[in-house]
Length: 241
Image 1 (cartoon, rainbow, N blue to C red):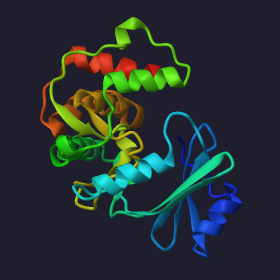
Image 2: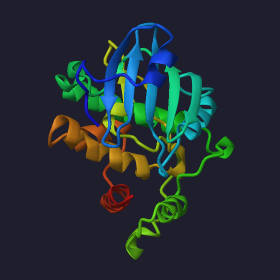
Image 3: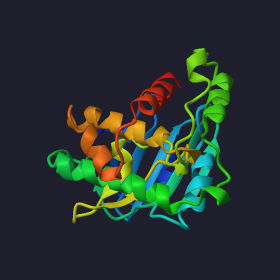
């Protein structure tokens, strides 16, 4: 993903969903998906449909998780032709990779780790209808035509089952003005899995967003020691799928 220029063309559907509100581009991904912020406190995601996840699936996960932890409220979602969209209400805070927090990496990384731990502690495994286990991810990869090496088709013994975020990279944690996490976004893959499926990816993403040397701080923020085997497996599975 990248932060687009202010001159990013606004799709017709996004204009309609904005209903006259001002629009500012926020994100653009490699498959043509875009996210805009409106000046009345909404976010509009618009993207080509893919086999990996859907915005309808994300809407369902947000609606479920919102009872337990700060995640965006869904305003609308839908699809037409080969595109889909999701409209949510903004939460307080800035992305952990906003320039404000990239300039304060120690605060940002600690907040991401603490926020991930809070998410895992808050969401009830027994009541979660969504699955992000290794078998579920392997099956989803096969449906998308991805052939995984045998070593990635069966994970390590589960450390602790939690409801994982599913894309725990640093940009998906929001941080308030006090330097503490304030919410999470982009929960399209949320589901029950070993907590290391999230921790490994969050730690890996610190280097992408803040440079090398921040992994330990992420683990400290979460409150856990490194587990080399589980971190290696879940990073490899992430990169392969």
